[in-house]
Length: 454
Image 1 (tube, rainbow, N blue to C red):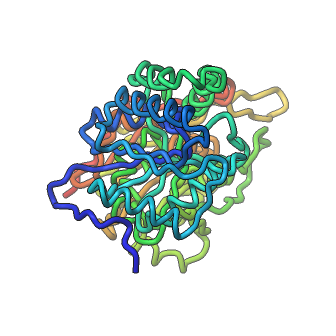
Image 2: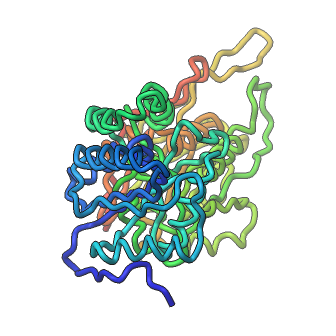
């Protein structure tokens, strides 16, 4: 059986990455900032171009430009490789895969992760490069970059984002090293593509990558995570790793009440928002499993799983039976019986209550103006190697606010500023405000409570 490469690693070797482009300038367009960042961070970085032009003079010019670009990025000559396969006719075959492996073996290079083209590309050489890399590097994480000139934007699904704003100047110099391609390389389009993805995750100028995890690559996923500047992944991966998240949501509470002018389905909207966020951004299959709290069979998950409880003690029996009796949490949702009135967040330390704000009209209808929720993140007291999360609102809007704080990149970036991972000796609670009038969700930093573990 063929090995990926034959160079052996030692326990003390630094992390390594290989960038593979079909043509000179492809790597610079899609991933030059990341390559420069890895070099600066002490990685062993390789640079490999698969094809060359049929015209000898043009081929020589383009190789010279590629070597200069690699030098600008900080990649040494002995890590700059060329396979000299035919431009425009690149195919994945035993010969092409074998040649790539042989060149790496000759250079003593066995990369931990590999960067190459996305398959969401209309250029046949780019798609072939993707297929060659997958065949040559089994058991390796593959990160796929976009070449804006031929990208099929609707099919590109990046999940790893590397902030490269500090390396924008180096990237520009590397691109300009390809002088023969001045008319083809659109620097503005390259920047606009990256900035478009960056705005979604709260970065300035991140390079986006798809992630392909082949069987056996899991042991190297931590290296990919170390590169990812997406707050979503930096928040969720330390909590879940590759384990599922069992979401136990509330059930409607029927009570006599005056007319309220708002939807009762906001918690469900939050559940769907979380599920869709994982579907869009997570590395692997969606880990969220949604269960109803009126099903007693889900109680086993409290003792064995990562669990998210949503709603309040009035509407979720497991919050009422378990969470409200945990040692450590400062905030809970309380209410009076028999009509579930006086709903409020109770501060167990000060004894103060926090209520939602309403606007009542002359006809007795009430409109919710501001709601609040309790976001709890801690080790699961029933299974301390698992995570417990609570999204508990006074009303559904408060619960929805907690869900959005767990999904929206800007809010997650705020949370990560004061929530520390791993959750070895403490947990956290914080109030999330949902201003319905303004359509805004905010984190009340001064409400932060650190939960000490016994």
